[in-house]
Image (cartoon, rainbow, N blue to C red; front, side, top):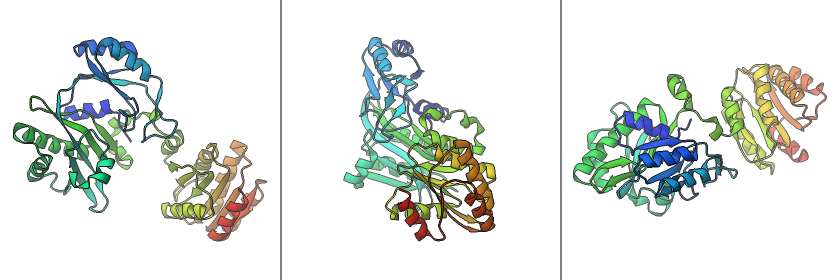
Length: 384
């Protein structure tokens, strides 16, 4: 689950990480009033779950309250398209109005999970305010990392080493080291998959301030953070993925036209490969799980059928915990609810296979059975 910048900054502030003064506005008039409170000048920032806002016009400097009103008016109710969004962009429902900062130096700091290290790693870079992926590609020597032992946490010698690599000294270095330590506490306490400050600035008077903030929370740990669930903004999410998440279904929306229903993550990945090998493209990754009921299978297939891109559906089920007859009844139920006539390619193996085939065969829908993945691939081609 992603948080908006202003939500992440509220959490940062509770941990003692310095942030600019700011107010959230949902109307142009409120943005104007907030700018008056900031002394007549401000920066107006679109609150969306995506980076690259500045390049896309989602961050504007206002040199007067009227400038702020106009900037907010041009953003609110619109959709922002950045290099991190889908082509249709994401809606701007609020803006963050902040005081202007006296920027002497821009830095980058983040913590994420390193799959190789199998633990958290802190990343810093002296080229803050830029696309970190671009820096990693063009100047990888400018990026510095420190693996963090979860049992020990981020150690003081590590924060000192990181601030030295950033080239900051004196009081600013001590403040930055403290911020890095606090940032790890935020990461650990909230079960984050990512926390990021870009940029972390050094001001003209030697202060260090988090000018931006990003937090991604690990969905599998949300049961420990009931208070954070209310911060979720569904308008920023893919609606099919949000619906699947509400029903505890592992679903990722993709660009193809072959809807895929599978039980098991590994089998789902193999199914995507088979779809691509057939010269087609999957419309989704979907793992309905092993203990699904008729109704949960119907909900999963209903999500697939509600995707306007889908032109054919591939079912690849290994009947173990999820029996083939249960999957078949759920599929029929979903097709009946949606009144769908999309071609259905079915490969089933395992428990109650014959019962499952019989249910689907007698359903009256356009069903093609396949015994192997090769046959399924051929059936996908024929159903194009």
